[in-house]
Length: 406
Image (cartoon, rainbow, N blue to C red):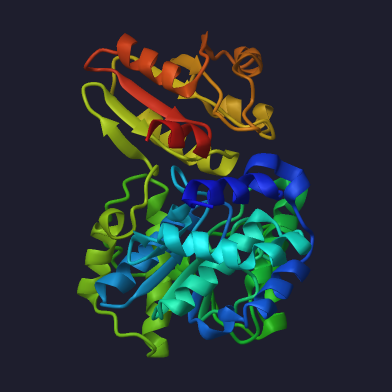
């Protein structure tokens, strides 16, 4: 198989949450442990930082990787989902895994994958760990896919565990209360390993404290950090807390004396994060006159922050290109959107994409008015055609929507 055939096989052959939803979820780590043993446990040969949370995982992981790159280290970065190319998930110093490595890994182990019915995510985690070991990275930043306790990445013993925040998302898998979701995220806290907690609520804090006591893990609340937080190339308002979480994590890393990281490294890491890691889709400006911003926020917690920032912007008319997947609670997220906008309803090219007519019908209930378009690209093109230089275009609702316009 060539690269495209290999990727198609990964996507189509086995269950994958990103496209299938609930049917791809496995409530245990048995297959991941089986795969790790088969690969001679690459996860035990890596130094890692583990990052979980409802929102901000990708930004936090990328900021950490960027700082360590600026300090001169060879840094593996594992994130999900990807926007355009599967290889975005696995990078070393911002460079994507080679097509050849992906092809060879799948070809070499395909029989094992099929015989044990491994999931897309399990295979991808195995691929990432194997690649990072073979390439001899100094450290790998590993982002949790979903949850934490039962996530395939949760076979590592990191130097530090990081939990960015807790919000109501993936409730069909993780529970429908903040406490239940916090319990799943807290599953990445390991015995005697420090944990950084980015944000907490009255419901989630006791869950984290209880788990930290059980595991004898020193806990650090990023909100307690009192020092200057350096500026970053990531401009969204929600990045303020992510930067603080990263600063707290770096301070612990410095105390551990595993890595030498200077203040200059931190400053440059924050400023150069996009060019160092290739992170995209976080309050990303795509154009001016009119101003065009896209953002991958897709749940209540993330959208509430992003849309507050949107309401602060100055514009003559507001245009919103909106598409979502079919497992979103529309009654929860649609009330967050401004009524003083023209909407361009669309659906991402994905098995889980919600039909734009259904999205429009629900949006009308909350005073959101606009037209339906056959594709994201058509909706985006029409929004640009109808906008003047002083207008503002926001594109969002789903990671898949952003992927189609980048």
